[in-house]
Amino acid sequence: QVQLVESGGGLVQPGESLRLSCAASPSIFTIFRSRAVAWYRQAPGKQRELVAAITGGDSTHYEDFVQGRFIVSRDNAENTVSLQMNSLNPEDTAVYYCNFWLTPIDWGQGTQVTVSS
Image (cartoon, rainbow, N blue to C red; front, side, top):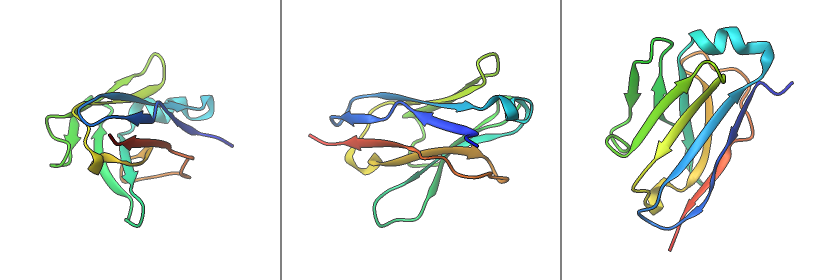
């Protein structure tokens, strides 16, 4: 069954912004609200990599390549985790996924982000 669904991707020009959303299925609401959730991405021909994460206590972690540009947040009332992506550049082009940090479950379909002029 679908447990984590990513949305919000699209085609943007360099310097523009996008906001991604990760929504949890009702069957995992309880653990989604308490566990750390992370955003990952996978560019063509590359391995999946961590982008950012947020703990159940709202502590955040960012990889160096997005520090200062991306913001991760969570809304436990809506059972969502968002990724605000600013100042996008072509190197950010990838399929973006969300999953539990360090204890991933089945991966979803992801959402495609393409940054191109």
